[in-house]
Amino acid sequence: MIETERLLLRRWRDADREPFWAMAKDEEVMRFLLPLTTRRESDAVIDRLMTAQDRHGYCFWALERKHDRRFIGFCGLMAPKPPLREIEIGWRLERSAWGQGYAREGAEATLAWAWRELRAPSVVAITVPANQRSWGLMLRLGMSRDPDDDFDHPALPAGDPLRRHRLYRIRRPQ
Image 1 (cartoon, rainbow, N blue to C red):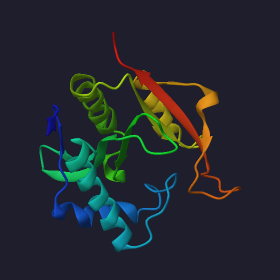
Image 2: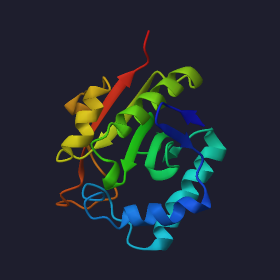
Image 3: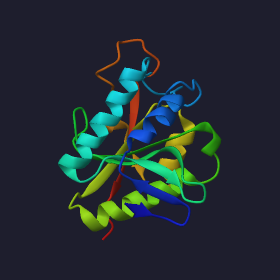
Image 4: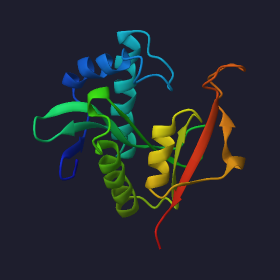
């Protein structure tokens, strides 16, 4: 578990399934993401995250607000998987948690953990060009973008407005 001033980044619990599904049904939260159309798909995401935690020692962890113990989303790391060749940092928060600095607080703690616990030379993040809030946070975290690293997401067909992805990278501090 990672603890910040206001947050806990922790393992997933079965109690997180319902609020995660509620977040997945929020069209504004999912606006720039692949939709989860059923509760079964939503639960499968949590199952994959639990497996990743067991296998690698990290995942996109459940994000809990400390003062009220409320699940507000996730933030963490995922092991490389195609088309990515580097560890990925990612986050998703329920809409009521937006604009309060939680994503940045969680992401900064995640990066500190990565540099302390992993030997990775860099960490990447991805988003679609239209998701200005997300890539804005990537820039505030000190990540940079090389347009040559941008890619078309292989799970999306040509012409899909979410197909093109930007890749941002941060290198291990010296």
